Amino acid sequence: MADQIWFTQNSRDLSNAYGDDAGFEFEFYCQRCGDTWRSGFENYTLGRASGWLRRASGMASSVTANVGWDVANTVGGLADAGWHKARDAAFQRAITQADGHFHRCARCTQHVCDNCWNADRGMCRHCAPDLRTEVEQARAEGEVYAARTAATEAGAKLAQGIDVTTQHELVCPQCRTETHGAKFCPECGHKMGGPATCGSCSTEIPAGAKFCPECGTPA
Image (cartoon, rainbow, N blue to C red):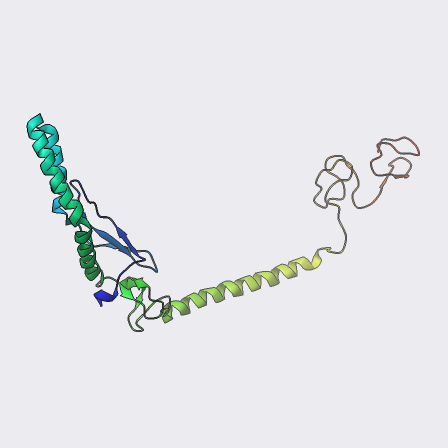
């Protein structure tokens, strides 16, 4: 089965070609939950040796350094030439190891971890969900739905005594203050919901007028 699992979509190459940490390591992740597994570090001897020789040449005398650089460059060339082949071989070994940690779903073909695998069905838990989990989820959804329905019905009963037919002005036409349906403007005292009348002679005051047109009383 290892030859059939290539993990082209769920792997990350953590390998380094040069330096003290030259080597191969690969990280694989579950395509359902994202949990990761690493293959374990493998040294790349030529890459490490090339780095060591270059550092040693930098600390040597001029004559020795030139010889050292030649040797380092030769080793570096061998490291470059062998890198891809060595990396591919390490990747194949990592795939073989990963075979024991991931499963390929027969339906969606994704590779998933043990926690996301339904062994009884041979599929991932997305394609073949756990029955008990689905039942509990459905039960929870039913409780939420019933609670919302009950709350809606309770709200409808509370709204029975609310006047929903009378139109309310929400902004004062005189000073543009929000009134939130009040009978009088909280800012200027303007009467809402109808034409204002003079408090002195009861004459109707036109919108925007500052004084009563009949007696001159301030609006």
